[in-house]
Image (cartoon, rainbow, N blue to C red; front, top):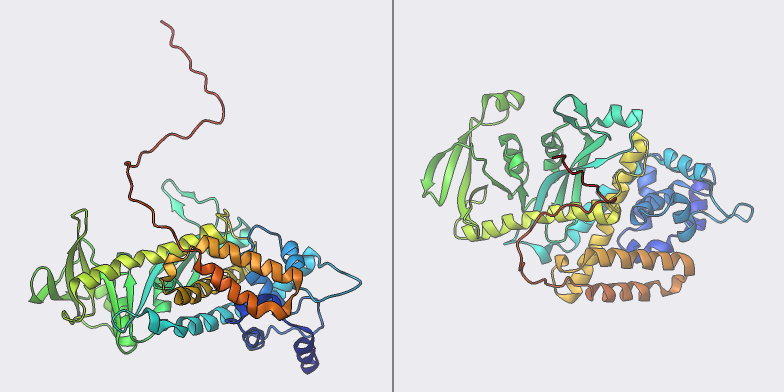
Length: 441
């Protein structure tokens, strides 16, 4: 029965609607994702597992539309003369049958392949540049979500109004492609998720951290876990060390590992070393950067300072995910715990698809991927996919893909002039007229 179902899917299912971006996301990966996670559909359904995977990705691209609209507009359901439309309950049940594992498998498989494609074009002195940082997302306030994910606690024993998901991502800075991600309950510290991601950092790389991740357990794991793997992180104001060699501006320092850290991780050494670089920004603010790159001639202090400034690219990727793709929605779409995980993995895959297409267009235009407008590229890809679903012009897909990249090249961000006026905080306009009460004499 399973063999018949697989043959039916191979003969009856095509994904031409997605092959504009599906050049990078082969249909074989979709099949492998559902087979490896045991989510393949046995019955001949209108929404088999493979099509539901595309649906989850599409929902991230069309956050402003309902599930029914996305299904109808993109033609993701198999045709049926007796029932031309798929009901909401059928779509919800299809998502429940699929679960989150196939989406996670697909994201990890595709992210690794996409980050390796053009990495040679974006290296820094032979090293890939990554950044690691955390963010949060709100979910619907259901009993299961609140029990599983939890929420932020405030002073006075008050709790946030919505459950929250905490996550950490490993992002390629030149292309903003997300290499890997770990997320879950809000109560878990970002350090917990960062430890999960450290083994996924590739060799010959430099990972830039925020100072909140300054811990020997994480940074020592970066340098010892793979060949030629390095870190760059700002020191905290209370960080103490002993200078081994060098001067106050560029020195090799030795720091003691706390006894508490060695109890948690007995493999840690008693001391660990790093290079401390003192940099001063344009506002005359002093910052000390710690790095495992000790070659002063090859990796100059100015180069390391410029690398750290690029760390803010990961904050830009969070803004693109949460504001542009999710439409500044107050909560995620899904209301169940499994659905939340499924939605996040699908959103990360959709984001990477857009970012990969931008990177390909930037190579053609010989510019940086960050120079291409994400918002305009996102809207253009939305239109292209919708038009593919409406016209079903499969034979024109290669030409359409070429047109898409040519159009992306014209969407470079415009350089804005410097600020002429100081920032000023202004009061919000009142919705209703205010009546001023006069004091009695």
